[in-house]
Amino acid sequence: MPFRADREVPGLIVKFGDYPLHHGGVGAIRSLGRLGVPMYAITEDAYTPAAASRYLKRAFVWPTRGTEGADHLVEGLLRIGRRIGRPAVLVPTDEEAAVLIAEHQDELGSRFLFPRVAPGLPRRLASKQGLHELCVEHGIPSPAAAFPQSYDDIVAFADRARFPVVAKNREAFVRRSSPAVNGTTRITTREGLLTLARDWGERPGVILQEYLPREEAEDWIVHAYFGRDAAPLAMFTGVKVRSWPPHAGMTANAYVVDNPELADLAARFIKQIGFTGIVDLDLRFDRRDGQYKLLDFNPRMGAQFRLFESDSGVDVVRAMHLDLTGRPVPEGEQRAGHRYVVENIDLPALLAYRRSGYTTPHAPARASGTELAWLAGDDPLPFLTMLARFVRPGAKHLRQLWRTNRRGSAQVDNSRDFPPGTPKLPPGREG
Image: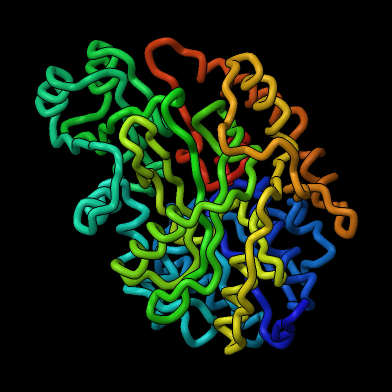
């Protein structure tokens, strides 16, 4: 590798909530750990896949639900920082952690290193309404959306809407307390919408969005790290081949595909809003009008970030660590054609996609290489731990998701109802 990381500065994986099977956290531990960076992680218990990694120096067992007060979470992080004993780079794996860090930079800055950003920006980006408003403000295409304030507003919307439509929770964090919908819900009829809306209360916390049909769309992803002045220090583009639940959920299989137009769009938007740090963007290319429409902006690393690595050995987590420790981030081309597979969900996704006959137009015929989310020859225990925790409850939940996804009136995508990028296992949420 044409660079050396600062081995005197450790990394800390920060996650709030109960989602032990998070392959993104394991990927970050391995990515920096292989460079000799001491790695620490917050875990639900001592028997998670992350805690089993040979590259983890210590797991701090701290069960949280994400609904705790900010003061409690900040004090807990500072306590962990004191136990580490030296400044550490924070690597948030969910929106709750990213927002908490951004909104409490002054308190956390004495113990940790992290990209400095406008304190309110990550919360706004994680909000479906906030993101939509930013897209409109800066001329970035996004699906048409409405934000009803009452049941009467929903009735008026239903009278003029073209079905199917999509309902999502307006704010990112209501999934912890009282979500209106369980993830992204496709609603096919006016009657179906009005029936669901009766349970949303006097002030429905939902966004109603146009549906982009999979037959006329392609799912693209952008992962990047932006340094000071929102300068792109690492930028990657790829296409999602399979997800679970089918066509709507977390990434199960994806490829690196060069897309300069998409990279330029992302860089322009980040520059306009002034964001600094790691981003994970989900966009859908609408072949009907030829536009890439921004669906989700995750202001932290995505679970599938290890799909992307440059030929100089840089991924977004490594880029952040290098930048925050004052080291240059080497330039390099992304590994076009490289594939990423999440073993525990890609097999059911493959079966579902074969049944539907859907294929991804831009996926290469043959992979130039494959990165597995869980299995690694130099670090096998996380894979075995995942199997032990996943097989029985995981298989049951996959069946539940499949049945839910096949409903006629409302198809549910749980990918945004749980934490980013892993299967939801009762009683927790996705990671």
